Image 1 (cartoon, rainbow, N blue to C red):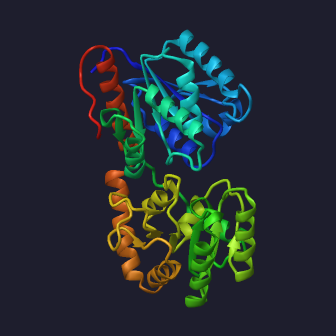
Image 2: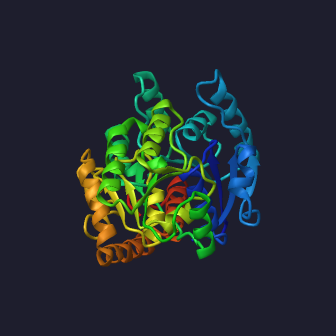
Image 3: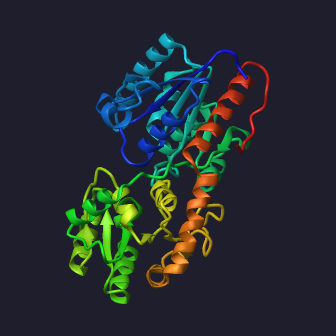
Length: 382
């Protein structure tokens, strides 16, 4: 254990949803007897990301320009380089691709630079862009993968296994009073006495149109008393808008962007992700933490938190009829749904809590810093 607190800078691009919640969870759970934490993010994110955490971390406004803007990342990296030279952080922790690129360009002002890649490498990428991203990742002292699928992809990109750690995503169970749950349903014209099948929009990319509409349509046919809801903000492209229009014609409800998805998660009987999601499925973990069994398409990650027949239902990718059948079975077999929901809650509590994620990361910080100072080892799995 170090006598001096480790000074950590979390670097975040403009973001919403999972990445922002991930960083906020870390800030809420970091052990402040071991760390001195600062958050660098665009000024416009301060209220949503930093509110209520003023006594736990410092905040530095730092704009993170889109790489498509000429010289955008160069300007961001210059601002970052100035900041880290001035404040002399031990750890620079970049979250996401854009922040990783900026940290790589900023140089080695911190003793240790690491990145968390919150989703698989972007596709499609032209060869030059992919090479640039790979070089930026290799410039980091270490890379964190929150899921096994992302870890494998990093290794396939040529990163040394000793410089990639798997630290599973962690969430805290949302606190949803009954009044908030009922208010969320009634605001959408939904009946609190009828079951809700929730499709989180971020887990339903519009490019996989048939799987989403096929699953939703089959559920409405097989369980006409159910209410199908596409909740939250999906990709803002024409395909996603077409998807929403098709679902409304079927009789489903599309909420559009929602400030807080937790009340609708708590109101759901089943949460459905009909296609493998490119994002980290924090929403599924939050549903599991609430005891809601998920139904999802097989992502090929056998180590994921959703295990078929144990913590939810997993069906073959592309089989929207199987997705619908599994969801409807859980609506009709409440004993099975409750059993899976209890196991899902326990899985999150024991393996995917926010506190566990923060502690694993703190151990990694200490190991990386010890190695940088000439001693210690850094395990790839924590």
